[in-house]
Image (tube, rainbow, N blue to C red; front, side):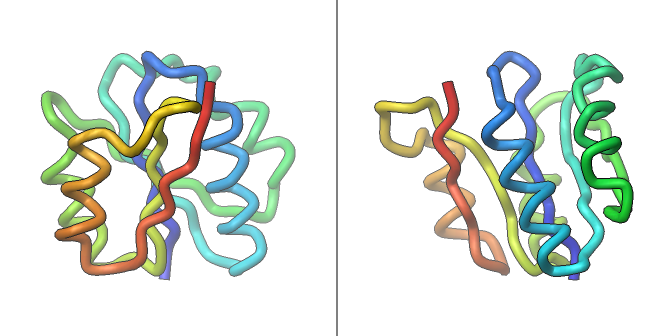
Length: 110
């Protein structure tokens, strides 16, 4: 089952991306990245090079990615989302924790 990463392009998310790639690699699972259209293509490039054995699929969405992440959780082994370091999970992360059909990892990042 894939690892699904919900990625916010406005956040510095190296810790989050690294966690998702590492988890997918350990599980020998594909990584599905759900993100808005505004994510620069170069964001995932270094991670793809570091984890060449991990199959990565990008799912670009317009608007709120929450519903898309919930849909993806029905077919996922793990849903990975972020939160700002020093804070608790935000409203979106709390909603995903309550409603996702798979375990949710909330990873702190800068």
